[in-house]
Length: 265
Length: 177
Image (tube, rainbow over all chains, first blue to last red):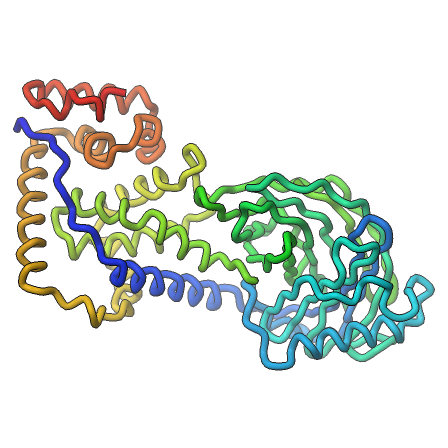
């Protein structure tokens, strides 16, 4: 008993590791799909970043209990034509809105798509971030409003948040909406340059993976839970960032209620 | 565009699986079993992800701590994830050559000798030796992995060192931190 030298272990081949890695991802994704099925109703919103003008476009539907049954906690690959149809519905909704809060037609500078988040048949599109006007639009099946099939909108204003550190995110807005009594929440914000993936941990204990791109993130979920923290992936590994939301407000129009324009981090 | 949690865990696996595998292999002395236990560690880590603790921004100590528990309760861990493990595809190009087979057998014999060498240590001493000496974790990271105070890591290692006082590796800089 006099030898504590480290015993060598043959290295696993890249092939065997990648097989195991792929299996792990599939098992985890399968477990989440099985756990997260539930019914909820949906609306949609248009949100302005840019610090000057904000537009919230809400797609509020008749609100059946299972209207959000196809929602997924992780982004999914869009079906052919899904994104272009959503963009068209959003533009039509903005143009047709009778609300005096609405800009006539798409606000200037908000025609460029910056980020698209798809979850099953639902599509969340962010137009024109970092311009004076930003449009955030959610669309999906069974969603209608008085202004336009599959769309409803409002304008909001919000200060531009500070850029997050490279390994962190900043929650720009957390929008609590409702449609026909069915609550849902949208989160939008900025992603530090070193963050490759971000998952929001909600106050009800569930988590929602975000879509990231162009330095931004998007996510939404049925219900009114708020964000309490975020699990971030960086080159150094995974970290947990607490998220505080100091500004909670209410407001809205039609059957959509803009309850909250908050900042995080 | 999408950065989902499963994909993030896939990246975590890519980053740390070799270290976890080596730890499991040294704990069990069985390379095939270690491979399955490595998968179990990451599936269990996902299940307990809200308890993730970082040490110097790395998840490795937490994962090694998870591996320690998984190996300690290997039968139960494997039973729990048996159906998931059964879904792992047999690697078509992973067929072992005779040379590979001999190499693996030699490695397993070496592991068995090493495990026998530390068999007289207490379980706590073994765990510290495995983490600090064989896996080269810092005292702090070993404390995180085992969820014990750093002082306990030091005292257990000192105790192990006393039993191996004639052994150079124990008094090497690897464990003198």
